[in-house]
Amino acid sequence: MTQARGNHVTLDGASLTIDQLVRVARDVNMQVTCDSIALEKVNKSRQHIERIVKNYIEAYEENADGDEPVKQVYGVTTGFGEFKNIPIAPAQLEQLQRNILLSHAAGVGINSDADDPANYFSAKVVRATLVIRLNTLLKGLSGVQPALLDFMVNCLHAGIIPLVPLKGSVGSSGDLCPMAHMFVTLLGQGRFYVVNQASNRKPASADFRPASELPQALGVETIPLPGYKDGLALTNGATVSAAILGMAVHDAMSLASMADAAAAMTLEAICGRTRAFDPKVHHARGQRGQIDSAANILSMIAGSSLVNGCEEVQDAYSIRCAPTVHGASRDTIAYARMVAQREMNAACDNPLFFPGDSPCDAPDDPTLRDPAMDWEAYSVGNFHGQPIALAADFLAIALAELANISERRTQMLLDRHHNRNLPANLVPAPGVNSGFMLTQYCAASLVSENKVLTHPASVDSVPTSANTEDHNSMATIAARKLQTVLANTQAVLAIELLVAAQAIEWRAGCQMKPSVKAVSADADAKGAAKGEYGVTGAKSFAQATSDENRGEIAAQLGAGTRSAYLSIRKLVAPVIEDRTLDEDIRRVRQSIEQGSLENAINMALPNGLGTITPLQSL
Image (cartoon, rainbow, N blue to C red; front, side):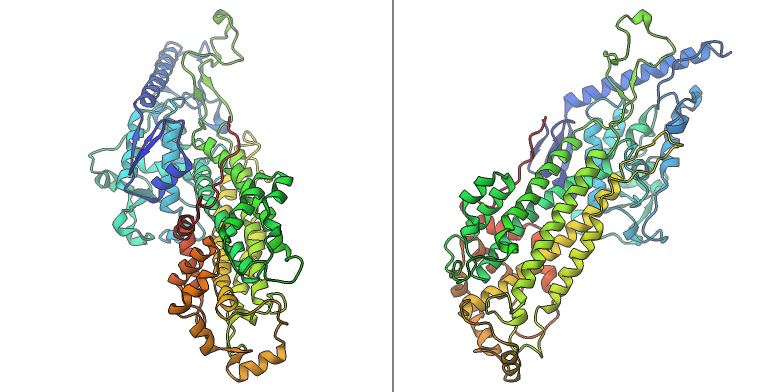
């Protein structure tokens, strides 16, 4: 069993969790070790490869005249892909494995500047990829030499990050291109940089070092060279795609909770009705995510004096249907979590080796087996990234929907015709001040971008390797798009939280009742001329929202929304008059990314916000 104690994780090839993956990917102080039983499997599998090679070399030399066919084992004694039927001379077997790393390192970035860090996967993605590939090889089905596992562990501990170009993978036979870039450093090719906790920053071109300096960075005299089967074992599998999906699932689970928190704050700001969140309603439908989302929102607003204060019978869809929309996204995250969890602990190599067993197409009587046929290796399709591609595409759609409905709630809060008697754009003295107007523009641009990015990559396939590889998953493209959609959604929710905090201050701090007729455009103009908004001017609003009065505002909120509101106000001040808002958005977004806002809310609630559990696994 994979274990994590403090800053230490032990990998066994079967039980790596998403939380452990993220901890190692994001914390260079995490220590990784390999389970001893798993290492025994690796050694046994390696011995099997060495026997195959030994028997091949003997048969090859005995049959120097080519009178009899010599049994071939794909990827060990033959070329790859289109060249699968070309036997390799014994003296070239190890060079074959090194050549796959050299020839497959053919990726590109977003521009032609080799020194632009934007052209390469982040350190977190590279570290997550190393962890998953290490865990995969520990299953003992790939035949890799154990020294390479030690090398990977040492790279994690030393903070070694090979430069891996963003583009070039079709997701089958796995992420060949980026994986080759990662491990071609074993041959002194390519470049790397070093990260550590003290210099937790984005790399610059000055940090890039030639791979020839890798032994020095690791503090060793030499690093292992790939031998029989090793090059194929290091590259075959959609490991980069799985790494991105796993980390995205981790962040998506938190984002779903933040969506519920944002909806709860908006519900209070408009004095909305809680009937739409009654547990009976959602159990009647029976969708798990919907039930959990409604429960989260009710828990957040428990004790609020603002809700149910409106005379209208029902609220807009973006409020009333929030559990339904959020819940569907939560269920999608649960599906993606199941896929990612399986893939992180999967044997994704090709071929695979099961010493002592025979493939299902082998005759039961060994004497009937054609001696020229390969009965040793299982040439299969576990490297294909389709499960990851579909999950990444689906997850991107689910996150985009969290952003879509959030932007609608932000628009509602800023629109005086729909926000139930709150000021337009939530600012005193409108006209001279635009307030939060452009935050909605920003959110609109992000959700529009998401709509383009959620076109699925998984429905596409361009054949490769002379049509030998005639269906490809495009998993890495789906995963990279998912990263952008996730980041956009974090920003959109940060905007809603920021706007909702100010809306609550108008409602609770300035006692603006939702039943009062909305202020007209003429009144807006008159109030602006006086430096006021209706009965509440800039000075009055500033006083009502000052530090000494913030507790009175918070006291009117629910248990969870109170914590969220106060946490946001520790980061940013109310907007009294126009100022740049990008830093406000960035601070709230960072609290989402780092989990500090979610933690603060969880501490305020009896049972915290509901977690998202994976669907039933095998």
